[in-house]
Length: 353
Image (tube, rainbow, N blue to C red; front, side):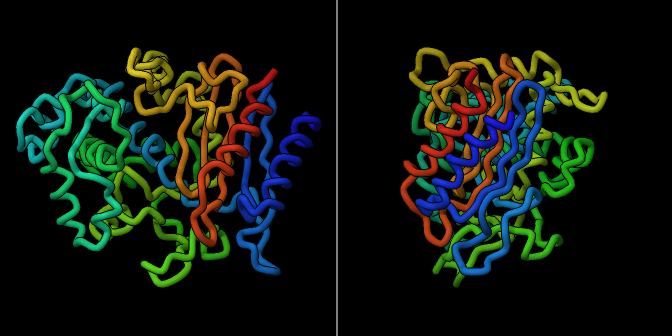
């Protein structure tokens, strides 16, 4: 395993030298061995605090899978809902408009809901109530289930449905069902209680007047957070905490003697639900994405990325998982090719033979 850590270190140190990110926190499990590896610093400033294994990062769109889709899948697994339920059965205000009554929960979980709304970042200066109203009343752009359309709006709706079924806000549901029982003590939607030095800054953003640290980076999620946390972005976590979650999935839904998902539910997460479309997605998870899963075994790997420079991935057949947390958009966002190259290289090391 020392050889693996040397290979990982070489990839990461090269990335730091090329200013892909100032530092990162990485955790993986391979061949039954678990490792947690911090690298670099929180920023490029001289004397900046070093990244620690417990450094907290804004994980951006990883929120869509952990906890948003996972909460909805948990409720379905428990029989409180079905993938074939109409969204409007749980969220009646969504049904306004032709065809919207036929949108099912499976369309949320597979991102085969196509709404004519555009990027939510364009709504960032509106009051949160107006953003939610725009999402819920947006007309369909295509018949449900006919077009893959990855969008923040779909994840926001998914989060609202999970809340309606669960009867409480997303942060409370996530803490009760996953974060608390799994011991993910540094994971949640409100990281400021740990202090600024424990949190990596995301970006220097003129719209917000300077450094973004400890508040959600995504613009629309930031605006909506004035009213409530949403399912599209806003989770903060550490590499060890997220690896705990991925290890639970590697064990087919079990950890510490407690069952979080049935084996059937985990199988649905890692089985392509939209074959023939040219896209690949399980229920709530991306599948077969070499851009961040590498080329070793992407067809059997599932995971999720976040815009800030974070990613999680796992391969059930190999019993391996990888978590990479970084702030690659610090101090300002850049092209995705560099971070994806790092993600893929690390995945090849962890998921390769």
